[in-house]
Length: 108
Picture 1 (cartoon, rainbow, N blue to C red):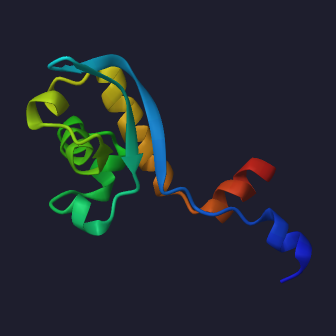
Picture 2 (picture 1 turned 45 degrees about the vertical axis):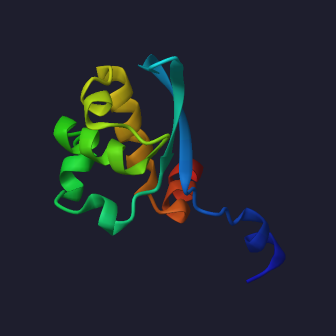
C-alpha cells in the first residue's frame, strides 16, 4: 500500500448524531439530538436486515431503543415523529455501507 492509498482511507463511522424534528420532553429535560451507534448483531436480534433497510417502523423503533444515546424508553421510541424514525433508520442504513464501496460510488 502506498502513501496515496493510506491518505485516502477513511475509518468507518461508528456513530451519527441526528437532530430530532420533534424533540423528546422527559420531565424538565428536552432531548433535541440523539447519537445513533452502529448496531452490533446483538442489537439486531430478532430483526431482518431487509426490514431495517426497508425502514420497517416497528424494526426501527425497537432498534432506536437499543442504539440511541441517551437511551429511549419504549413509550418515547413509539411516540417519535415519523421524520425522526426515518432519520434514525437512514443513519443505521449508513452503517451498512462498506466505506470503500461508498468512495467508489462517489468517484463514479
